Each structure stands twice: as C-alpha cells, then as structure tokens.
Length: 190
Ligand SMILES: Nc1nc2c(ncn2[C@@H]2O[C@H](COP(=O)(O)OP(=O)(O)OP(=O)(O)O)[C@@H](O)[C@H]2O)c(=O)[nH]1
Ligand SMILES: [Mg+2]
Figure 1 (cartoon, rainbow, N blue to C red):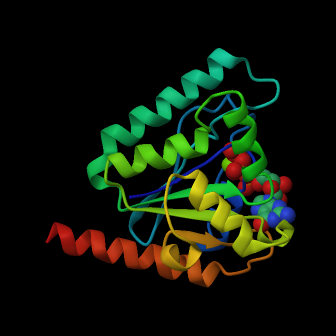
Figure 2: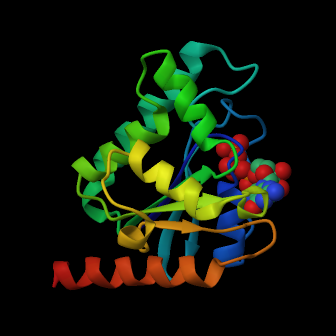
C-alpha cells in the first residue's frame, strides 16, 4: 500500500495522477469527503488521504475529526504501508510552519512526519510546486531543520524530493525513490 498525505491543496491528487496516470476522484468539498480515496495501481492500493490542517470554511471540530481519522487509518495499516508520500507545498510550507511555531504549536506537517517516523513507515517528502520555489536547496535545508533533522539536503536526497506535479518536473526522480523504498520494504518482509 502507498499512501499520500498532506494539507489540503498541496497537490496530492495532481501528483498521484502524474505518478500513476490515474485520475483520482476528487472529494467534492474538503472536509466533506472524509474517507480515504483508493485506486489500484500496479496491483497496489494507492490511498489519497483527505487533506489535513486548516481548510477555509471547515469548522475546527471537523478538521480535528479528519485528522483523527487519518491518524487512525495510518495506525491500523502501519504494517502494510510500503511508503508514505508526505506532500507539502514548497512555496508556502516554511511560512506556515513558522506561523505555527510562533503560536507555540507543533506544525501539523512536522507532526505527521514525526508520527510516520515513530511508526517506522518509510517516508518520502514530496516538496511540490517546485515551479514556484525560488531557492530550492535553501528551502529544503530549512525544511530539514524544521522537521527536526540535522544535516543538509545532500544527506537526505532520498527523503526530500522536489517536484512539480503540475508541470511534471522531477517526477521520475520521485518515482525512483518510491520504487526503492517499496523494494526495501519487500526485502525486509521476506
Ligand atoms: N503551481 C503549481 N500548482 C500545482 C502543482 N501541483 C498542484 N497544483 C495546483 O494546486 C491545486 C490543488 O491541487 P490538488 O491536487 O487538488 O491538491 P490536493 O492536495 O489533492 O487537495 P485536497 O484534495 O483538497 O486535499 C490545483 O489547483 C493544482 O493545479 C504544482 O506543482 N505547481
Ligand atoms: Mg485531493
């Protein structure tokens, strides 16, 4: 199983389409479609999770419920998740993370990343909307620090992969990383 998680509007569905060629049915409205959407690709279940975090027009308690549902889904399927693709919007992620930090809260992207690590789920962070990022290595280096890791992008080439789902940039690299993590997962299981 491959899962795609991330805030609303970061480009999860667009990225799934780029990677798999399969159009993911879109939830009509964020927060209304709370169930993970599933497609089958190469005989695998690919799950497009509802977006988490702030969504304009969605009451806070509904946002919280969506988050709880995603966490529960991941916990229930932890053993079968071959790779989790955490999609972030490379243009706005840092700004949003810093806003949460100023409020004394743990940024939700960071929280999810650490949650996936704790469950030992192989993870790739797809830094999407590359077409809108001015300085890619600076952005990724800062993200690495925010995610609680030490080192630079050089040390995490298989963890942080910049892509543009919209324009199809660097999708091959992301696919390679995903395939590698899946292979490693299967080798561990044998
Ligand atoms: N500039 C740019 N826009 C993108 C990129 N990827 C996606 N988008 C746009 O971002 C918007 C949201 O894309 P979706 O794929 O629907 O995002 P999502 O994460 O599935 O959103 P939810 O289903 O609401 O959680 C759309 O308008 C896309 O065209 C990208 O790489 N660059
Ligand atoms: Mg979507």
